[in-house]
Image (cartoon, rainbow, N blue to C red; front, side, top):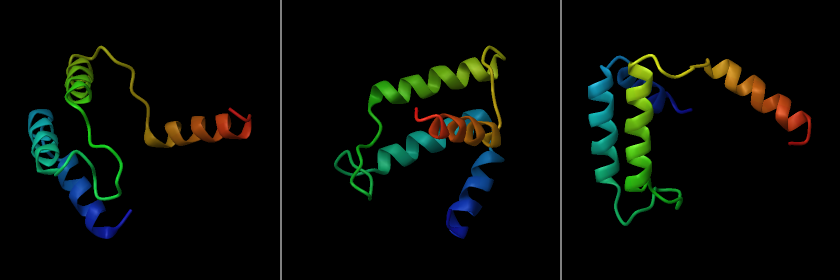
Length: 83
């Protein structure tokens, strides 16, 4: 991760959940032609709705969360198992 991106991420993580959703919406709205700079597809409206739904579940304490370290550990275990 670049230093600039790390700085932006840290600032975004300090925002309230509502401000984070607004930031996501603004960033998505700024994407031109439906693709990101690397050519991958931008998020569809369906994914935006899913992000909002999951955020609401998180805020209501209805979802399990794991640390980024745990995600990486699980991914590495699956990768090592050939999955």
